[in-house]
Image 1 (tube, rainbow, N blue to C red):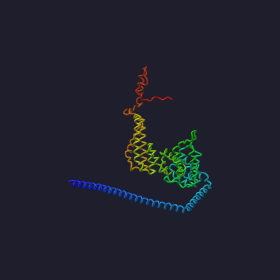
Image 2 (spheres, rainbow, N blue to C red; image 1 turned 90 degrees about the vertical axis):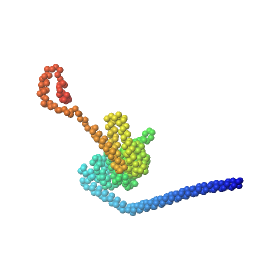
Image 3 (cartoon, rainbow, N blue to C red; image 1 turned 90 degrees about the horizontal axis):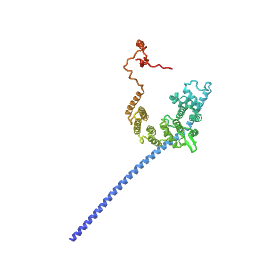
Image 4 (tube, rainbow, N blue to C red; image 1 turned 60 degrees about the horizontal axis):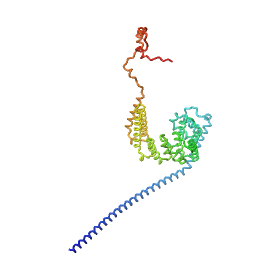
Length: 447
């Protein structure tokens, strides 16, 4: 019996050892499979990255080759371009000299209505001071002829020099009407940019250095020296836009602090051209910071214009910003009604605020082509209701007491007046105020 028990114990021990070895073998197999899968995943990742790296190298090689071909083409055509430019300058110079030598060409065209002729006359003579003053004085007439200003400047001998001379003369000899002068300079600077308003022209280095000097002197006008040190005064909206147009036109971004330029863009983001100017200056990557600040200050519409120009649609969906602006305007409108206890004045202010917000949304959707992403049917309906109510509130009130009463002819009642007067002439307390028609006859006005 003892021998049998000892044999059974040995068998159990062997079985336990076999189970332990089996568990260890299973663990080893599991670890091997895990390592094998991990190795295969690493191999695939390395292969994919290697392929992507090879594709990037090929793309870089192709771009480098295209750039080299472009440089080579520009170098080979440099002589031809120089010859064409010199011929153009000589042609324009000869045309100007021939025009000046004419007896009747010493002064501007006699016909004051010939705006095109006057613009060309100033531009061909490189009369920058006369040109920008003439444009400023004829703003209403030239608003529809902005293309004529560009064509006239193109006919000058040196368009960049003509414009920078105009800006310098503007700083030295300003005129009183600030809006017209800023508009005139803006038109002259805009004429040097491309048709889309973002392509900078080719400017000589000497002209660029002059532009730097003029821009720095312009900036110094807004730096006040106080006992505590220097303090910058804020630029007005139109003047800030002209300053940034000059920076974009002559490529002066690197000559000024980036924070200063971004601050001007953010402070005057409501102006139409700010988003285009920021893109023209190369601030496409930095505009995310500007957009964040505009959203935090509840300027969603301005932010959408910057999103549209910078292409950051995935990061800042325009439809979400439009909904935010719509909800914010509703809250402000309701707050005005609540604070004003629904008084007529509060109702009018609330209605005006909502109308302005809805109009800005409609305009933003149209300019940025967001019709497919944002439905404006309800907004149009609501805007029509508000505008109709506003128009009705402006109509003069009509007295309802006059309706249904027959007009009384004064001439027809004359016999009655005479008979009544005869009966009451001897009455001591008779007066005109008791006459049944006295309330219908307006009182006499004495001077």
